[in-house]
Amino acid sequence: MKLVILLLAFLLGKAYGFPERYVRNAGSGGSSEEKKKPHIVFFLADNAGWNDVGWNDLTGVMKTPNMDALARSGVILNQTYVQPICTPTRAAFLTGYYAFRTGLGHAVIPPAMPSYLSREFKVLPEYLKELGYTNHILGKWHLGACRWDVTPRWRGFDTHYGPQGGFCDYYNHSVSTHQVINQLFGLYSGPMALDFRDNTGAMFHHKGTHASELIEKRAIDLIANHNPDVPMFLYMAFAVPHSPYQVPDRYTNMYEPTPVNNLQKYRGMVTMMDQHIGNITNALKANDMYEDTVIVYLNDNGGVGRFGSSWPYRGALATPFEGGVKAPGFVHSPLLEKTGYVNNELIHITDFFATFLTLAGGTPDPSIDGMNVWDVISKNKKSTRNTMILHLDTHPVSPCISILDDGYKLIKGFYDAARNLSSLYDLIRTDDWIPPPELSDTADIPDVPEEPKNTTMLFDLSVDPLETNNLAESMPEKVAELLQLAEEIAAGAPDPFFPLEIPDVSDPIAFYNNTWTPGWC
Image 1 (tube, one colour):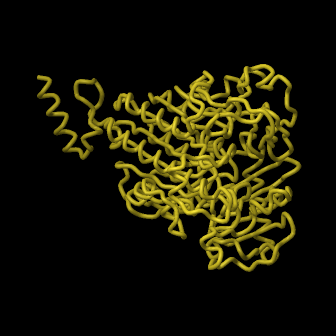
Image 2 (image 1 turned 60 degrees about the horizontal axis):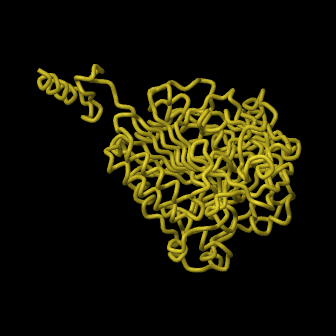
Image 3 (image 1 turned 30 degrees about the horizontal axis):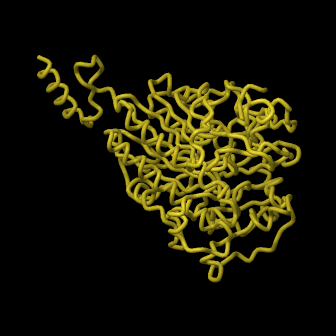
């Protein structure tokens, strides 16, 4: 009798057009038409640039064969935007709200700062947990860790493996304890303290092994031991290729030396990340999960000037120029209806919150800023998104608004931290066009007069994607229109959650056995 029931279920599935993998076992008690929830794998790179992936690389130098294959056989994202720096991008992704709404739109969170993503905001893994998902974050958290209840295990993740802060030395897994938190950055120097955890336990015993290789191995182990019938959310929050520029020699040696110090190592880190992505994809296939998986790759912000290459776009991380906020990305999945094409629709990182939640069977709150773009990607449908806030900072030392609406992009206010920190500007050149060294003699660099700091800028990206022609003076009405629109969207935004005081009790050497540890705020 059971065999007859199973055969009927199979035939009904065929008759009604449901893929076999979506037809539940008839003996399970579930509806034969109920879709299986997909596994979701989200790869987020740290400080990589637009030109650092093979499908965008204009030098022919970058070696990212695994990502290239996934991108070209999936959907390449050509108009996807993130925040200018790390913490705001992660807050936007996990909440579905623009980062300024969470209070984290100003800057990154250093380890000794008593700031965090408020529990007022329910995050994606908490929703997914209610829908039956097992959730893992491997890599950096960087949304605050001064209290245990704001760290990943208390925010819907079943496991966390990696740093709770923004980066660490890749071999000793530590971060400096002596910090000066100015009004823009946390600056580090002095003795080191561990910042690498296996859930809540400090990871002293793996020092000497590259942190990214540890994270890759843990991901493969989790996948190999996972029940494919239980939906999984795997958030691969890579720290690479963020500094420090450390990588096994086998990756460095894939590249020729360049006049730019550490660029060879940086490029090796990108290729190491590509190898991780290939190995993790193979693990999904080995455990019969790949056919039911949605894989997404994005950068968290632009590259670091002469290291991560944002060429041919203007700018780099920490600015709302295209080189700081336009992210290379792809979606790869057997569940896509249309593949092998470049998607040019406007997408924001908050949209992946809404998309993942919808794919999982949930319903996004209508108040969020993200929207479900699955059909935009899977079917190449027209997006209904015309507007997005690229950056909004109300901190008194760096007020800035950047909005994109119907192809026009406004930047008003403090848009370039590096120009205000002269010791960094020559290295990072965040408001400039910086070709890779291989193109330095042949690149057509726009001949644009240097403007005063923080000049209001208006660009028509439909005809000027490289942001060379500032229209602000010739189109004051458009400037006023976009400024009003941005202010309407931002109405009621909280003040930035960026306390400058470093509490003595945060000191990991004095109080926590040389380990950055929550519980002091």
